Length: 167
Image (cartoon, rainbow, N blue to C red; front, side, top):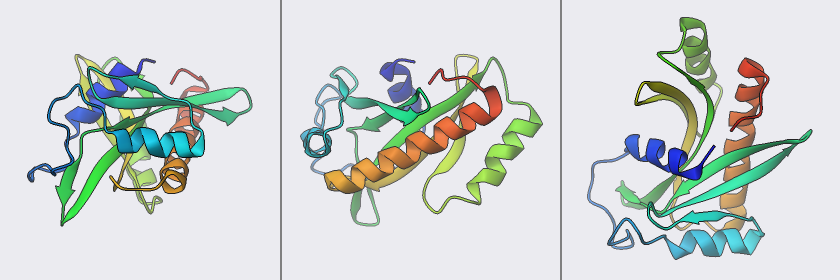
């Protein structure tokens, strides 16, 4: 799964309509250096999509599994705090999800202190995406723990529903 897909889908899930911060990139092609510094601090390998200004991490999960996580450079103001999205796709469908899967995602939302499941349609494909919003100034340790949370949550759902390791 490419990081371009992760970024494109995460951008469709705009989490705030307030004005962007002064730290928001002037153009979509500028990645936020604070993300790179935090990822470098904790030693996470990443790819940068300069065109979309996002960071993609393929995190090893264990048992020969890995899971992709996207961190957007785009930030938004929310109640005076600058925030960004971390997200990961868990599985996809050629059309709307069956009621069992959609209800499972909805029920799972009740168990998460941070983060939530969303269903994001894109050109006829529907994606189950786990995402959370984090402070744009989060240090490396905090960002790393949240990346791990997103990756493990999305991978567990992928394994539960498909038994595959695609994302």
